[in-house]
Amino acid sequence: MSVFGKKEEAAVNPKSMNQLGPGTVISGDLRSESDIRIDGKVEGNVSTKSKLVIGSSAVIQGNAVCANGVIEGTINGNVEAGDLLILTKTALISGDISIKKLVVEEGARFNGRCTMGIAVARNSENEEAKTRPIKQQAQ
Image 1 (tube, one colour):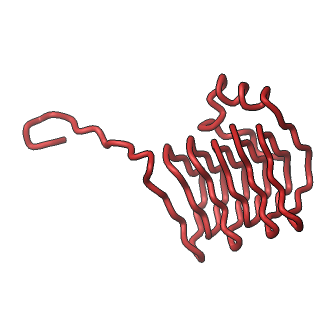
Image 2 (image 1 turned 135 degrees about the vertical axis):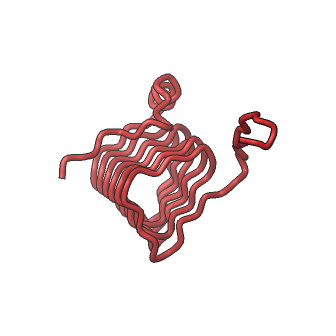
């Protein structure tokens, strides 16, 4: 609240980048309107309406939902991208993938089902799945 009694709204900068460095551990869900880069560990779901980058040293113990994603590290959970998902040669996903478009580099690995196409993107947009965490996989 400002000095004059008006409530100030925090402006969302779509070009801002949230970064979680190596050695950092977050227990709980992580949500953002802007880009996220993770090089540490998240024990929970991660969701953004923008780009998600999972660095090569990163480990996600939960689901990931994003508009676009680049996965270099490990995700133990489902991944949903409204548009493009890139799996680099160091990527490891143990869970289902739902995407519109997929790029897989030689060496990338995933164990689970892959659903892709325009219907996935439409469902994501209609249900606002980019910001809604998907149910945690049974472990």
